[in-house]
Image (cartoon, rainbow, N blue to C red; front, side):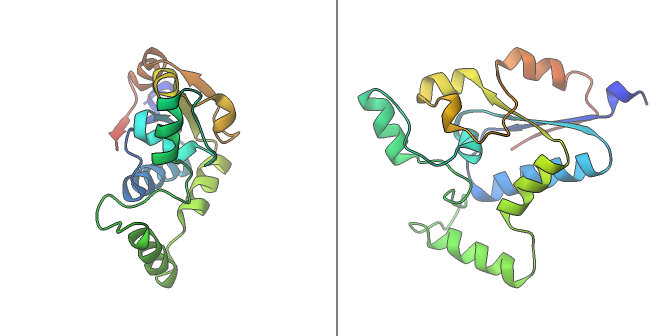
Length: 159
């Protein structure tokens, strides 16, 4: 195995708490065993790397930003969210079982050098700017850049 093969790429297109948690779990696991790890966030997955502020400049963009506010602390699970109660319940259950929180997992990925990339097309369509993203996002790129990183990667995962 060459160093160029020792890579993991993760496509994150869901903004659901459980799927984002799984994506960051795989990313930190890969990075912790020395793999050069890249996460590419597109469409709803962008919610996981947003600061959580209001987004959008047009009427439709502002409505989208209002209905789909991002931020790692506001994303809900894919099932049984019940207006945020599901998120609260899951966080409590995780804390009681001493499972690392999603906040901590994101920070761990950052500390391990996981590359966070945001999809240019998704940002454009959803009227989200670079300033709306957490500072640790390295680049805003097109799918071609992600595919170049994914080509030949030993691990390729989609959430």
